[in-house]
Image (cartoon, rainbow, N blue to C red; front, side):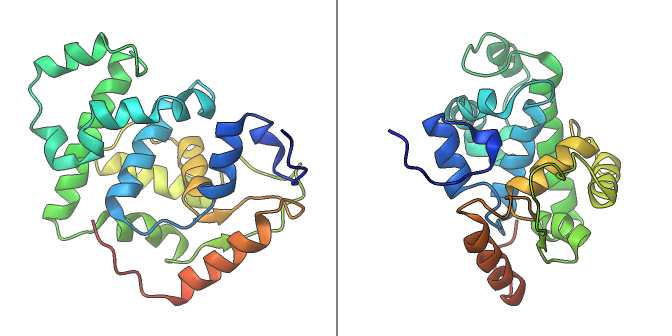
Length: 204
């Protein structure tokens, strides 16, 4: 049943998409492993719609050890063939391999003493960027996502082009791209300002 709330147009009237839009999209994320999971899932989206991946998120979490990088890198090589037969995820060999590559890159950063959340949030100086979008002015990339993509690729991550990085930043609250007439806009702005003022305690 319609609730008559004004939302960003991209979520349409799909109940799962509306819940994701209302409760997740644009809310700032501090935890490194949660950021890792979201980046991997955004990479799986390449060439597809986000709702396709969102509907498979539970399957991905089961297939990839809840996106725990330490557990992922310990999976045997033969497991990748099992994943190619897993109808619950996107059965694309490069995309399957990318999550293993990303897990190794995540752990390499940690071995260098670099927390993944700090690595990612540095591109916006640790502060969410708040915009006043009207709807027709939402970019698919910008200078910040360009820099993030370049740094992630250099660190060994894959499926992290600038468009994927911008979608990722939108999702994890590094930018507020809710349109101003969306019922979530003011609340997300408040969360972002609180996040900017609070020392981020989670690491990973």
